[in-house]
Image 1 (spheres, rainbow, N blue to C red):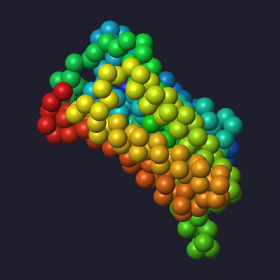
Image 2: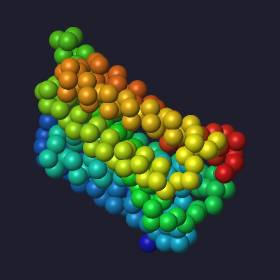
Image 3: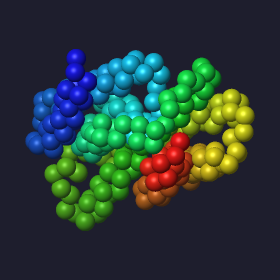
Length: 266
């Protein structure tokens, strides 16, 4: 199959799914169609990544390709979660984001001339747990933003049609903390495996990533402890979630963006 056609179909299906979610949002049948379209898009997206890896005989961890991999994992996690949790409406924002990452990966392949490298099983465990942690906590961050919007609109006594279609605030908050707990678990695995398998996590090129990842871990851990001991919720939960996600975003993509995009170095 032509790789470009596969990627192009995935790109348009992502947007079709998001539009379908927006239209007649209360209709369960249309939501199922939207999720089906997103499933086809994600399958095509993932297939293009696998075909690329097969062709290169390794995985490319360049900036945009990594972002593309992460975005399709986020979509799959969202689709899986939608079977038991009311998270499908997050696709309104996440599906177009996946399409954008796919488009950037197509437009800027290996921009900084980074060379794909083969990693050991131990290193791949560290990388995979890091990616899954970031994906789960990205979904949590979007969930936190929706929770903040929902809370503000309900307080203004003028909620929009979209907000009225969401579950009650208590259910949304419960879902948020479930996502954070799962993300924190994988982030813990990532940090522990990093300390075990990487010779010097505080080397110059890794120090900021390590410190920011630890900061994110402490932030999310403090939020869960605060939830357990002091009943933290609402704005406090949203703020701490976004602070933790920002630290993680800078850890995962901050230096990568500067080195590969701005400085054009490996």
